[in-house]
Image (cartoon, rainbow, N blue to C red):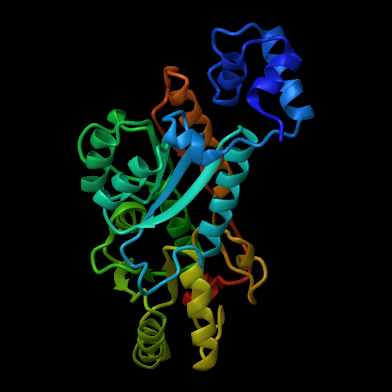
Length: 346
C-alpha cells in the first residue's frame, strides 16, 4: 500500500507537504505544488484513514448536521419529504466541497455538543433549533455554527441562519383564500402553542385576516404529531366540524399534514375541494402527485441547503459574512385543492 512518504518522493516534496494537502492545510502552499501533490494523490488512489486523522487531532473534514428533534422515539425525523430533500441537498453540497456529512437527530443541546466534540467535527449545521437552545449552541460549540429554519431570542445578528419568509408566505396564502371567498379559515400545526416557523406562519395568517376585520375568522387547531392520535382527531373533526360547515378552508403548516388530512377526509366522505378547501406549505414532491393536487406555498429545500453550506464554508475560512440572517423568498402554487366559493356567497 502506498504511503505518504512514497507520494512525497513521487511529487518531489517533503512528507509534511503531502500531509498538509491531505488535511486541507494549503493556505501557504503554492498553486503549482498543491496541484502536483493532488495529482499524485489521485493517481495513487490514496484514501485517508479517518480514524488516524482523528487520533492525530487533525481536522476531521466532518460537518455535523444535527436535527433538534425531541420526538425521535416516536417518529422518524426524515419521513417528511421536506426533510428528506433537505438532507439530500446538504449531503451533496458538503461532499462536493470535500467534506463528509454526519447526520444526527438530537434530543437536547448537551447531546449535540457531546457528539460534535467526540468526532472532532469542524462545523455544525443545526436544523429547527428553539431560541433557548440556539443561544447555548452558538456560545458553547466552539466551532462555526450555521442554523436552518431557526428563530432567536434577542439579537439575530449574533447567529448565522438560513430561513424562509414564513410569515409572508402564510400571509399571501391567506389573502388568496379570502379572495376565493373563504371567511371561516382554520390553521393547523402540530403544537399546542406553535413556535419557530409554525408560529411565524400562524402570525402571517392572522395578520391577513385582521386586515379584513372581524367578519373574517381564523381558529388555530392543534394536531397530534402521532399518526394514530392525529387520525382519530381528524375523523372526529370531520363529523363535528366539517360536516356542519364550521370551516370552508384549512391551512396546514406543512404539505405533509395537509396531504395526510386529505386522505382522512376522503375516507370520511368529505371531498376536497368541494366540501373543504385545503392548502399546505413547502411544495414537496407529493404535493404534485396527490389528488387533488395541493395548493401550497413553494420553497426550495435545496437552496436552503446550498446557502447553509456556503455560509459554513465561509466561516471555516475565517471570512466575513455580510448577511447573517437570510430569509429566502416563497411563492404561491395554485392547484386543485382550493375552491372559489365567492359566487356561492352572492
